[in-house]
Figure: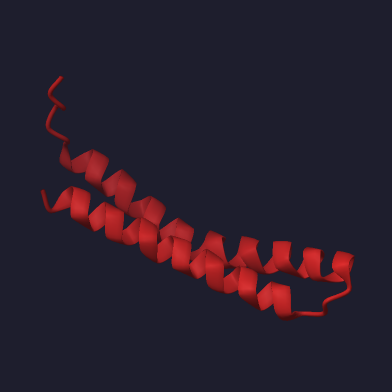
Length: 71
């Protein structure tokens, strides 16, 4: 099956999700890591690791989005 051509509006919608993920990913990772660190008694280290993983996932999403749009 062939994929229909995407419109400019769909690219704009996907681009706006990248902006949301750059905020939501690290924040959610931080708070999830903070909760996990308190639960396991590891301090604040898991919070920073979670924030870093959230940021990495946002960059991966951005790279996938750019590669999909540039095709």
